[in-house]
Length: 563
Image (cartoon, rainbow, N blue to C red):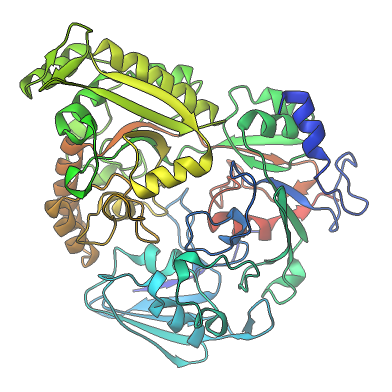
């Protein structure tokens, strides 16, 4: 089996903007009001809600800055999660499996350099695959060997067909001459990163960070955007106002009325629902979670108490997609749904069914109208990130809907760092949050990274951070699911994989460690007056939001000043 990388495709509303705009860069002749852009004009990107900005370009850190993932550090290949298509070669040129899928032979492009001018060779690739952060226990890697300057041979203890994206599309390639001396990778801020991507760090402040073109990039001569400034904005409204004022060029965010920012004639937008929005539940009492949500009956009752149609209409103004409790993305992944009854989560609330579930589990409704068991009421705290208005509105609606079913939920907002710390350490009960959708037309990545337990090294006890590169914040750990995940890694047989996925789906649909809500309305806004080459509905060559890891770096290499 040979897969070759194909050629790449050609504050308050007013006061907040005024103050923040002082920190924006309008370099050279291409300022924000110029009506066009030249190569000296910085493309201005919303950096997300992480404020103030702290310099951290470590791709393995939970607080890594967006610009590190793709613009600076790259995997071997880029996979377009919006389509079932061949990968695009970045550092890699081609790859081939052996007959039983246990060996992957990779050819990298010749004459590559790191951003500091040192040669990038197969030795760096072999080192990267062996490096602890990329190679957690249970990864199955037997050896990573550079057989010459441009060839790497990866040998695994079992077939790796299903993990193709993980190995080749999300393993960050590191310069050995830097990272060989980094033993504590979890706490390495990496303030002056050396990468293979199109950009290097120029300056980092608490308000923004600037990336500039990497003169040693493999396609440096074709790079149209020479400067990229990531701006710190701690809420959707201020970012929206900056877009409308022409002070931001690229942002992935929710705006209920896109006309509010497209009226300036510069900004266009696209909606690409891809990623599940869910209720995280800290579900596993054995790993230290506490609260009523650790009872599967409470999670099941809450699941049927939610009115998803109302949430879709009121919180997301009808822009979201319907979610499957199997976490297969429909219609792209419909062949992987084992039971048609699990195709889509219930759209209407059923308070009576929620009550029946709780009563069958030994709960009784107290005088306050809230169910309780052994004198403990079903009272839960629900957090979402301050300024994420769509998620905040969804949280309020969920609290109202749960109350009708005899479940008390107190919704509140927290700063991004508090949210990050809570889910990493397990110090929460419920969170409205996102799940990273799969980058290929196969739900395996979600099953392993989000539902895999301690056996497959995807989660940790409360009080410990989730392993690098994994996302099981619910602390869910199910031996049946783990066994099916491990078996799925080694098969290239579609029927066998469907059977294994059916086993996983039966367990997670029942256990609901993540309660599905919607497929998120992923809106992206970008400046089409000053820059060309953006993904469009007609040419959706990459997942378009500015925060998309790997994809954002690929998009930046496709952009050109409009003039």
